[in-house]
Length: 156
Image (cartoon, rainbow, N blue to C red; front, side, top):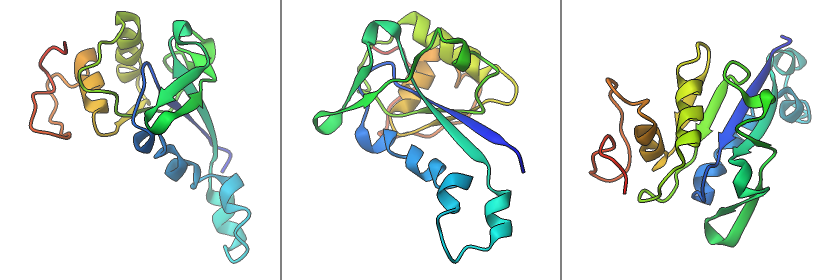
């Protein structure tokens, strides 16, 4: 298999570290990761894809994106970068931000464009559902999230 799965981790604001860390599970499916497990049959490793991660934020945020527990994640791209334009990613991971956060319209538009592109899957984690709701990509869909709140209501 010569597939490279491109995963964008969307970080427009501070997010929950645990939510962002879920990408490690996705990285565990990679050929690079599986190739160092000595007891794994070679044909299983050959079936594994290559995986490339892109940490994406607004250009105005700079390179260091705060996470909870006073940890930062280094952004590799901003959402105007050609490498993360709609159609370039296979998966967009949306970790959970503060549910009361405001988001720039340009970041919501980037997420809307990703969601409306064939072949792009959106994986939102925890309060990432509020960001997806603010972008309008949940309209007409059933979704679940944390808390007993209306994710389609406008955020403050």
